Length: 308
Image 1 (cartoon, helix red, strand yellow):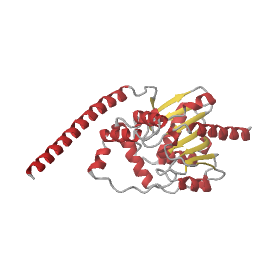
Image 2 (image 1 turned 30 degrees about the vertical axis):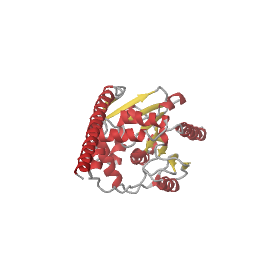
Image 3 (image 1 turned 60 degrees about the vertical axis):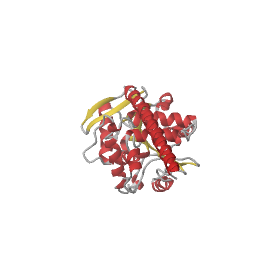
Image 4 (image 1 turned 90 degrees about the horizontal axis):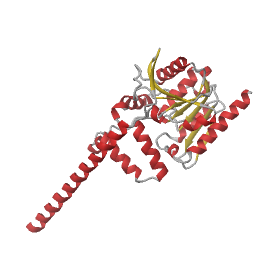
């Protein structure tokens, strides 16, 4: 019996040793990965002072109509996207939302304050109106902008967007939860996720992680504020929206329930709901985004046709 216990101890010690070596190796890989990410963050954004505070933005294109990209949670100007609209007679205005990267958090961090900040940005850039494209956690500020500044909103595009309150989850205080909330833990989680998806989705997730999640100190304020604001979000008077609206949402979305899109579509006058059957919250990382962009352009062209 003593010999058996002795061998069991040796096996356990060997397993623990291997795990330690593995974690050290992974941490070294993460250290150099993060160093490379920080070094190669895009440098094509700038910070401008407005009467509502500073905001980081990136403006591409020379067209006289503008697409304002409002990213999700977490995010940054570096993942604001919209570049595919540059060859479709659009200029693209991307931002870092309050609390993310070089945009300071507004005093109360509310969607109304955020919308006012974007209006001030447009004033500084002498942009009269924009097509507002709100993604996921950028939904509340996008809706608020369209409500408060309809004269500056050519149309509202909501992509898997938060449009009503999401109750906070139970506090995650376990050791494993705390680990995955660290930078190293989050990186491990990303590697696990990457092993479960196809190459195109893998490329999209990798791109997003490198441009929006690390270093976490650049997005923590914004992400924590988003969670707070979404958990206390008051009901929007969606019936008062007067701008053309299209809503894209997957019916398998478990991050932002599809029922939110259905409710918004029912309440927003003349809104169009583009239901993405079998798609989840991360559909925008897949090849299906080409279909979404085509539908956006059909929507925009239809608006233009009615204006002429």
